[in-house]
Amino acid sequence: MQAVIAVLPGDGIGPEVVAEGVKVLQAVAARFGHTFTLREALIGGCAIDAAGEPLPAETVALCREADVVLLGAVGGPKWDDPQAKVRPEQGLLGIRKTLGLFANLRPVQMHPRLIDASPLRPERLQGVDLIVVRELTGGIYFGEKRRERGPGGEWASDLCIYTEEEVVRVVRVAAQLARRRRGKLTLVDKANVLETSRLWRSITTRLMRDEFPDLQFETMLVDACAMHLIRRPADFDVIVTENMFGDILTDEAAMLAGSMGMLPSASLGSGRMGLYEPIHGSAPDIAGQGKANPLATILSVAMLLRHSLDLAAEAECVESAVAAVIERGIVTADIAAPGQPTYSTAVVGDAVAAAVAG
Image 1 (spheres, rainbow, N blue to C red):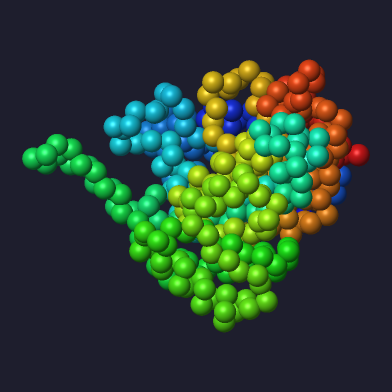
Image 2 (cartoon, rainbow, N blue to C red):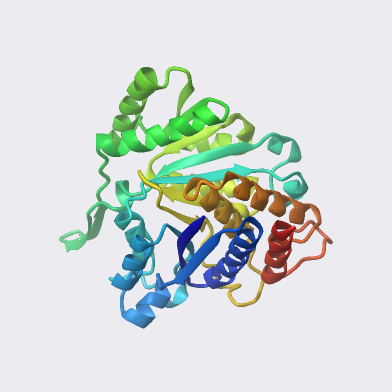
């Protein structure tokens, strides 16, 4: 296998965790006889500093030429002016849109050794194995935004629009995924209030009836889902939802796994191309200190191998290596048990790479 991988470290802890993901990719290549050509480019705040924009044309060109993209994180206090017209997050939204990556997969699994790292009671965490499929290129994040001053003071609006095509394509991804798992799909919306949610519900209900009658299908309001993710998380299999709801719910679901540093993600479109990144942010408060948990990035590498490069055995090797390292207690502080020794970002990455190498 030969593949070109665009590497976008980004800001904050992004370069640190991506470096560990690259180590693991190199270990996979060496063990299984692959050639991965890694090409780095700028995105986010560092791109604003260097090129005046969060997504330079050179970065877009590199990503389009590559087979797959590995990304770290974007943003930080330096670029956090709410009034700024150019912001790091525009780079992330822009690359997703440019590459046509409309389905964001965010798996949540519970490693037995990390139960104490979660704020939930252990009995609530037994059997947790769910995945959220978040629509990624539509909705309120991409709608027209206005802010003006009128006779009564300032006002602002964010337009949320969804089309039937956008809903159908992401629901099909989620439903096909549910067929390969436990056969249950939950649509999360706010259909009691929002017209866009009523569109999601009517289209998804029809699609389940006509194309996926074999699946167990339920609908759930987003506020109820937020409650049940804490109350009975093991009952969920595949959740599909719109852009903003998915963004919020997966941050909540990260606490099931003990830390946002444990959750990977895959952003997929209609072809082979995918963008893989941890769901956490740039964590500028710990950047450069070797405290960042690289496991979400490394697990994103496993998803990259499985979903874009069709290397299932290699993906399983990486996942097994992560599980083995956790079992040995080689973890960063965010998931360490009380009194347990903690290790640096690089040491954890080295341990996973060594386990992959065998």
